[in-house]
Length: 180
Length: 319
Image (cartoon, rainbow over all chains, first blue to last red; front, side, top):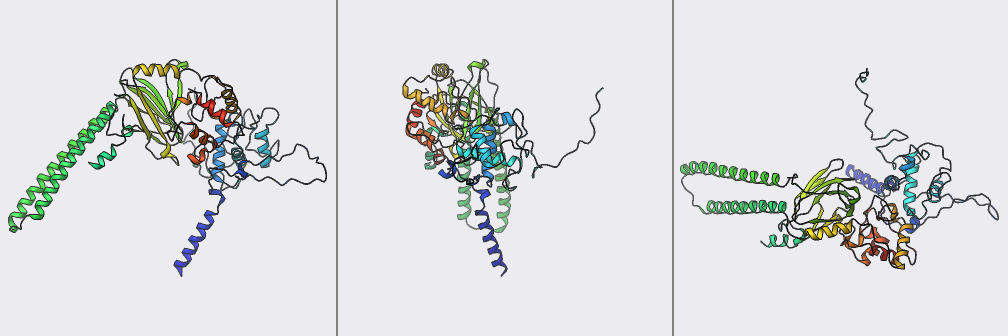
């Protein structure tokens, strides 16, 4: 009876883990994810009756591998050159909750692909679209807009919230001697 | 002997066919160990057979004789092991001599999953980069500084020297001294991720004259496209994601995270010695690298009609 329970539990755990989007790793992107179009409109005026757009879902925001890939690309494509590691520099910080051009995934996608006035360059044609979505997922994670279990658990850079696997703060044992 | 013949069958990547001073010392050590081990094995087998076929004797003289034999055998074993230890230590010391004068300086950086090769020079304009291929002159000791940009790799060219790890944040060194011209294959010898098996490199050992010629041409920027097709190909390259990661000296492409393509067409392979550098393989690599090397950092390129052929023509012109 007991063994049967354990077997059932193990089977349930395996099923839960294999169904988990967090662990999924795709190297060859399917065309739907690779060729997803940006749907952001510049105006709300449309001919005929107004129909609200279906909200675009970032295919990667629950996927730990894609978020970590986005983190790598954030450095590789030199986003860190202006935004630092989210803290901002020449460009605005990305780890806060004030978003000049909206915080929805399609807004972030449009910002990367189309560029924004006053400095944000347009990466259209320069970054494959699935990688743009990976970057979007990472930028979302900077401000905590992705599930906690999918976001990177540790980072060598400044973060908005406390890192899960960070070492506890170590206080210096004594004050440094004052310099004469 | 059959096993030995199998092991040494592929001469361009074999520690048993040394082409360099260091590798020759390692091969000699291997020979010493092999001969000693064979002799020990034969003696042990003879002793075993003698023990098996010897007739039982009276109880008293057997114990006395056995004690003597055991102490003699233990003594011989200890002396043999110590002699092997000494020869191993001496060989180890002799292959890590990094102070040979007049040595060339190279910097090899391991990436997941390719090798970046920088040819150092006091004059900055003479420095240049290559990838997955090292050209060295015969008879000149080459000091290689080993770095890693991500995880631990290991640099191993069996025909020229032993292994040396590439540890992130800690520079290692290894010296190569080739004695005969040839092409030797090396590979990563420390498991470094999904495509560890496809992280190899070629060493071209050439005569000093050929090396001087090769050096002069490698220091030049890339060739300017000469045909209309190549010019279109260059435009395709520059307007695609390519220049965000790849460098082509003499153009605007200056990405630092992927192999330098300045003299791409003169390489014998692509994707870290995974595929021969021929048009069909190159086209497949550009369009769907994740099929050929899943997990590699090269993203698939969605090419429009009429873009791929000119791009291939341009890349093939980068001699």
